[in-house]
Length: 369
Image (cartoon, rainbow, N blue to C red; front, side, top):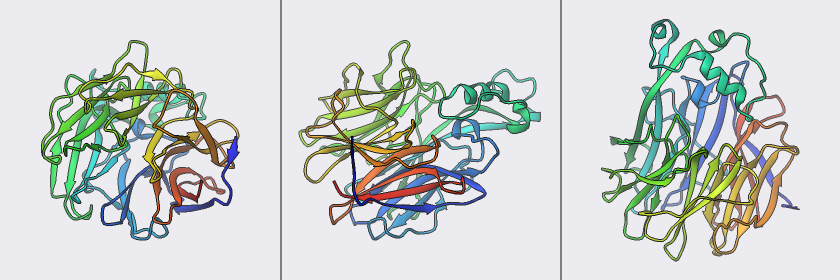
């Protein structure tokens, strides 16, 4: 496997008392870059958003292609906590959309006796079963997680000043799906429609899209993308190709394999999900200026790191040209990468990983292919 030469790796945001992870970045029409990521208190055992009520989404800005960044601020405000990973959309006319899923959380004493909540023992069972967590047993789930989780709500927030202020919030209708979690934002189609892919959190097994024809002010009913018995799809990564086709990579949690779906009619119907030969997950797709498609993935097996896969005509079920960006990260607490192309043609990949002190932080790698 080829390894990129001369990559410059940086720690962008770290807090020794916090867990910072799961970035998503977009380029605005005016040239600024925006990045949203998760932040929660650092704990003795790593908890991800489905298990932790204190996750918030933070937003920061760069006006120099990712060299420097503003101080991250909570979005849209401090009333939004207990969040899943968020997604950003940069619309051609300058509007910015922030899509979020917010769980509802209940303190443990108030949760006792209720049968409509996910209690700490069940949250701990999911924690132990996940290969992303390096934990085999948990002696006292209630001491670590003195809360219970209920269902939540999906939102899209709208900004007409580049993400500085959020002037309108739209609550999304997700029925008949359980919820609506998406970490990659919406596609803007040639006719101006917005297509937002979501997963049915907290089941994490079906993918659907919502459509807006008024710049995000309202959204139509869900259209199913992927729903196959025995499959557990989540974290869709969409891309609009120059010929108008839409492709989307889906994380599938039983096989730990990315799956590919396609649409040739603007997202109104979709192909059957097909497993790809791409190793690593979840994915981010970027159309490069030279017409190739870059797929960025996290690699959670030794040697731990970040990889990209290049495709000439959009992602395929084949592996493509895999390239290692770095393979020196300390453990599997990493990933969720996304990439932007700078004005000078260099690529900047954002991801999270542990630094040399064991603090999970937001990082970047700048390189050329």
